[in-house]
Length: 181
Ligand code: IMP
Image (tube, rainbow, N blue to C red):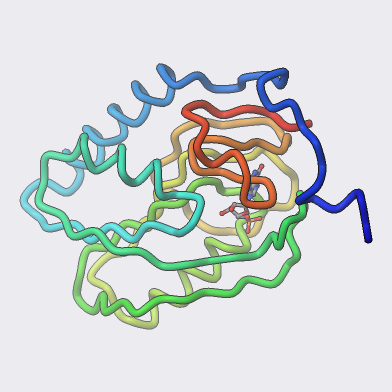
């Protein structure tokens, strides 16, 4: 048995550095909600949350929208319990976004590989418009070119968990964002 596997790794999560507090998240998500509502005034917005990581962000974001919206989800995976991307992105959804104004809501824009795949995949459905909102933008060199219109916070190249983000499916429930490294 491999005793150093991600699932068995013992981490004292409350001894780790809090990078973004719940109060900072609340106020930034509120600002984003106002900005998005102003940009889509008079239109109906189709929000596509990227599971699993964006579930908390999307749930909070929609509470600050003052425009009519539809909420749906797609599933994307690439990390497979590791701290570095596997490089392979698997998407699953049953969406029909033809002619719609679509905003993809993602937890983190890291390499950009996942968002590029999502963007290319959803463009095939010929939406009226397609934009991306990511809670976090990780500052790393050589990101994949993809335009992310709304960004919550810029962060350094560190592995973060909480507020939906996981490590081996753990720590998503934390109300703040913590650095694991
Ligand atoms: P990308 O394809 O490299 O941009 O990675 C996007 C996905 O990787 C995100 O949707 C996250 O699920 C995951 N990810 C990237 N960085 C982190 C991190 O620091 N913590 C947790 N998950 C991350």
